[in-house]
Image (cartoon, rainbow, N blue to C red):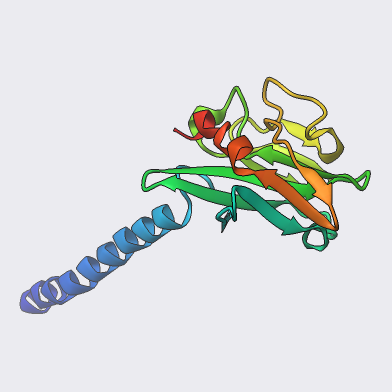
Length: 163
């Protein structure tokens, strides 16, 4: 019986090694999918001629869409666009002046954008209206011809929140 116990332990070693390896690979994959500590996936975007352009129809469902603009190999700037409960298309950086260092951003729950770091709730119709503190940092946007336009320059102005 003693030999059987020793053989079981030896046979289990490759299984333990495999499980640990899978856990490490999983953590690496998750780190690459979500920059920083962000848990809400973002769509990678690039400007065309210095402008980010999105069809208004993309936001008709009222769900916040998160975007990520890679400005260098080590830095991405995140922002979201949402059609708020009052029907206005709004945009903000996925960060605030208070919690940006945590690199967690916001998640939508119903009509609220919630800071993942501190848990504060912000009504979607206040995005771009109320600024400062833990409110989502406003991002200028323009609507024209059924499109939402955000300039590359305005997005780059938010780089300080993503360093």
